[in-house]
Image (cartoon, rainbow, N blue to C red; front, side, top):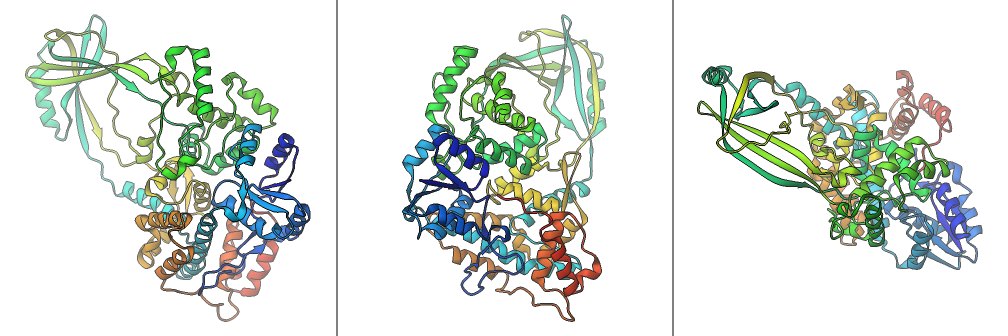
Length: 608
């Protein structure tokens, strides 16, 4: 038997567990060409070429596969299936048989289950490969046709992307909303009450006063009052339930907020954790967890924290995408005390950043199956000279899942919400009809605030909300728009740069469809239909091409100028190496060819 995967680390791990020969392709070994479009504009058929440094890999794979049962075990997503499909095309004539093996966890249990479920490759869903083709070819059409147009109009090298450009628009539009925002003054009226040494605040029920004299009139009316009459005292228990185990997007958002990792950094670390057999597959929309592992969490929690921390029945979560239910959320592959994390990471010779991300995954997964936190929530309503004031308070009665994983309000971060949080304070016991001493009244002047800038984590969450891109693409989207100089991170926030604003203004005027959120989201839906064999990838590509009026890439420039394909390839190299192409070089085809030749080979692209 021969198993073929993408990652060398995963290959070594599988071989050590199963004692079966395992090879890796180190990501894709063939792709569309760099120097030309590589797509037939009549049929949309792509022409894939071997990566320069992997020319001999197909021959090596065929030699290894000769007479063997070959397990094509690329990652269980569209990209992984496409790699397996390309391997299949190379080795099917030499192998005894080829089967598709989907690995969700690199453990003895997970690998044996994957082997048992392997099916002949010819019987797998080819819609996965067709969706890969639709995305790859559609993105190539947009990049190779619109990028030269933008570059010519804006007199510099620009790159237009089917999903990256809407992401840039999000950042640009948010920044312009902030610039256009005009703050307004408002006032908050509080009274400070004191019962037997416990002081607390009550706020006028009107909330914000837009006119200071209106609030001042109430201050003057209540100034002489020494007590507040309690009209209402409601107390009830509230519960806070845990969130499900991480999906890809939630992991990227949480790692950005808590660990200050970029989405790209998070995915690299998560890939290593998966390859080393420490976590389940990290590209997922699912929040489901294996029932056997749920039982392990519940047993472990009961033994270490006590039965009160375990709910009567396992917590159930529903994935947004029903197709995701076949997969799992991101979780550890083994149950163990948190104190063993450092030793576990050290054994695999991984870094402290791997340990931090693993602990985040571990705690979220364990907490997802714990009892809710319980609070005593109190609402008090007071009357002072006919004016009503309210005080809210909340006291934690039982920490529940918070003992393992403290929550943060990611929804506020996604919206950039900077509004005033309602003060949750400890309140003394007070009965209806009780007169509570009033210490003072305060009139606080405040300003309305603009929406907050995105962080990389909240930007990813917003892309997900809009249905733009997929979990496997978010890290590359945020990396691309940063590397190309369209946006930058500043004090943890994402701000647009002048080229990003110029590009969005150009696209808004000339090609608005490519930054239309709703349309971009619909494209993802069509690609999902391609997976289900309800739509064809060719029709998808034709629809994308139609949006550009079936245009062809601009021809080679006059007077020895560079071709548009050259410009696109040079832009990719400049972005990769973070260098600027001299202005004179951009005007001369031969000079640009020489510049490209000099850059090629200086640094290998990062494999998937």
